[in-house]
Length: 235
Image 1 (cartoon, helix red, strand yellow):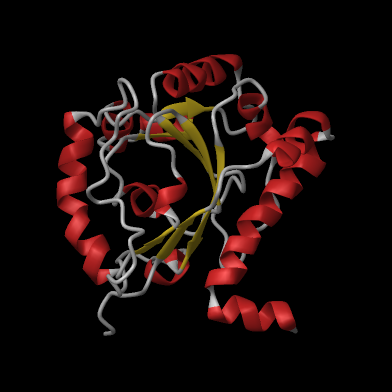
Image 2: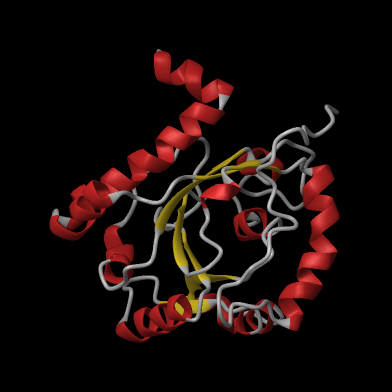
């Protein structure tokens, strides 16, 4: 195994969170304690672009989805809570539902991003939470696939920063159908928040066009930080 490169200053392990009321729950902190070392060293989780996150206010994380572990990979090196949106059927699963209810997860319908979920997410953003969304709606392998436009219901109702986030390698750590986490290198890249022109596209363009713009932002992070993706992209 290659040792993790700790020469950059992008790690957020010790960054303070000054955003109001965004503290992690006791369940969140316990899970963080349990998974931190395995994800940090077994999966050799690397963080890029942590300095792009504004720790003084809430924000929306729009992330590609490669494995069931993605919520952990995105949040395990952060010192603040991420409130994820997840399908409501998970809340009916024994133990998993209890974890969801105690780690700030917001239930959403598989077929629609309903008003109650949007209001809850907006409240969390006002309180200073990061709200995490996986717009693909299902796991994919490799580069980000089509983003479903349902997340527009949230981002068009808030003025907090919107961050594209790319995950690379989680599909190797836990591929579809796998029962165990495999040793792999997983990289999480937090992009810069969408700028004024991009937010204008997000707010004024047709929803599918706007969703594709965000997907391309995530894809550009993926390509820039994945050697295999660079080769495929050049072909």
